[in-house]
Image (tube, rainbow, N blue to C red; front, side):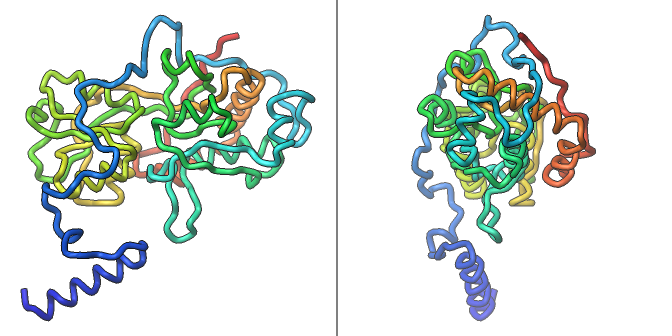
Length: 322
């Protein structure tokens, strides 16, 4: 490569980086495995049990009742309190492309999860814009609800027996399976190829457990968010990332040099997280989800956000208790 061509390439990279609010240097241009891992990254050999057992069906939720009209919530209900506060406060991700991510053009957080959250605000206020999106990392989802920082969490959150000890859940609004994301030509085609490899996951997720349980015993590195995993994979600091397919395809959409491979490692569902002392809000949110499934909104959101995953499936059927 000529010196002039090299200078032109470096200048182009500088322009792109400036557009993202970053300044390149010689270190950031290097993709060597020696680069320091991001803050919060750690090699782990175990993780807190996020799943548990013996709680019945963790995916089943309270049956909705008569749905009040927007702006006319029953007195002393959780929804009336939200109206009094002026906005629905929602814990969301801003680093999961397609589900909850910050659009670099508009600066707004968008995605399938955000669309679901806006429909809940629509049915409470009559206005989907009466919403306050509060970005949190996966490990903060439960505590943000328990501490009253948010009214609900819509952030690829899976209902489990362990989590149900602390919070409640709506019915499921999405189902997925867990696989692997690797660099093309990595030689990794399935979990059988992970012996001696480094696999990235995210703190506070249930998808760490299937990686740690693999008989191949890869080195598991936990991080705070999926963009950190993406960067580590691009810089060859890890050999693979593993979580649910929609998140993996969201990362792959940001780097076509990556590919999703391997067999299904687990099946996960996503539901809205709600405080345990707000059963009326659980029933209300389930009523919203009934509408979203039935009026075509769910299918529209899927086509707008998730079409890369394939033809539009039917939304998951609700399972009710009580």
